[in-house]
Amino acid sequence: MPANSIVFGAGGFIGRSLVGELLRRGQDVAAAVHGGGEGLLRWLAEQEVDTGRLTVVRTDITRAGLGLPADGLDDVRDVYNTAARFAFGMTPDEARTVNVDGAVHVAEWAATRPRLRRLVHISGYRMAAAEAASPDYRRDGAYEASKREGDAAVRARARALGVPLTVANPSTVIGPGQWVGLADLVREVWRGRLLALPGGPDVFLPVVALDYFVQFLASVPERAESADGTYWLLDDATPELPGLVALVAEHMGVPAPRRSVPVGLVKRLPRALTGADPETLSFLSSDRYDTASARDLADSMGLKMPPVGDALRDWTDDLVATRFGQARAPWTAYGFQEVGTDRTWVVGERERPDYVFLHGMPIDADSWSPVAERVDGPALAADLPGFGRSTPEPRQSHDDWLAALLAPVRSRPVLVAHSYSCGPALRYVLRDPERVAALVLVSPAFLQPASSWLTRSPLAVPVLSRMTTERLAGSLGLPDGRCLRGPVTDLRRSGAALRVVSALRSAYGQRGALRNAVRRATSPVELVIGSQDPLEETGALPVTEIASAGHYPQLTHPDAVARHLVAVRKRATDG
Image (cartoon, rainbow, N blue to C red; front, side, top):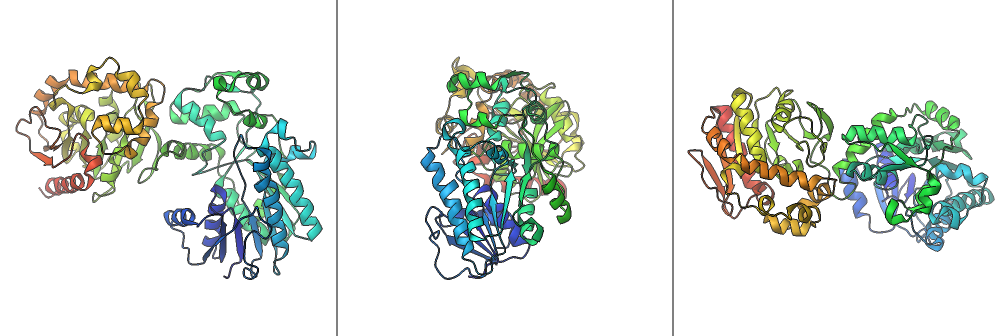
């Protein structure tokens, strides 16, 4: 099994990205994983990384010899240990097994490689404090204490065995897939549940971008001067914690907490009240770190850190896109943008879409993903202000927002609206009929009977805010709740359920006016409905009925909906 490099912990957040970087550089790479490596291979395929020079090997770093065969892997020059047990609430034994014993086992195995050039060990930026204090499992918690102990143990064992060692001490590494640590704080800000920040105004939680970090790691063994070096990798320009939180809050269109609570007080308060894991509080300090050697080495490699503000905003987009690791990211480009006066979650092509999709309630723009992946051109979708991932406190009406969303559009798309959004879409087409090729109304609420429990029940708000994906799917007539994981997470945001119920009640109150208005449309207008979700009336509008579908045909029958939309666009453009 030829390999220039081996990466332990290759299935993890840092390890898989390092494997990808090494493969892109044309290296033969062995990815050492505890399981079968299916997740790593799937991730590499999603990143469009050629795996022709990859070998996946099973390993167990908790065992001496790592569970690897005695022969083979003799061509390995560079050994990377990115494996770690990163969790809070572990017992000391659980943490030491991987973070201490496992790290030493990797160093011992590296010493047996006949062509070894470098062992690169990933430690942590808080190791600067390790020089002044020995590991204390009670004071620091099992994770940090084990990392400190492991750092010292690997250095000692490498010296004893004559292993050329480079230690990389990263701060919080941010990038797609990082959903723990600082991500928990961002999640609470996004949900509107963080009333006060722990610590004072000078708390420093530095970050480093994932791409920069793995490029640094991949280049280190090529630099002879980096042998026996220790490098703190973090962005010195990271704002202090209040500024960092303010930056991501502004990007998400939510208010940032204005108060702070001393760390000592947070430690004394019940965890059920603060929501803070005691182990995370040891990271809250004003300590600074000497990054000069890392910066000099990076300069010699031609590496430049991305602007920290851009890195934080991009990471925030990834966190929200996946609902902090609970859902799939959208089918194409995504992120927060300013649309008119409202911070808006936007997905897809902003200037020349062939299709523009507007969601109904209580779902979001991702509800159109199955259809957008099947149509014949680029698409644009967005979460309406007040709903989904967009700002919870809109400053403009949905009519004005839609006009702002479509203002940069230079094509004549098919405008497709579902349920609640059929109202704003119809009013837009009445005002600017030449801006769209056609309007497709899917299950329009204003043509249906006012029978939804969401519009009638006084318990709608508390029930909706506590629903599981399965219960919500059942109440909406969907076969399962997988497509609702994101919307259910969004409904946990402060006031979200109330906004959904209020919007639906308002929409049903406009039914008469909209039924009259649809008759005045001069643009092509068509209806798409499910056979199990009939309308009260359709007027003279063309109707496409999808067999066995209910109120959400885009979720249950995306192939049929996509085929119809492609046909609508062809008729509109050919005509």
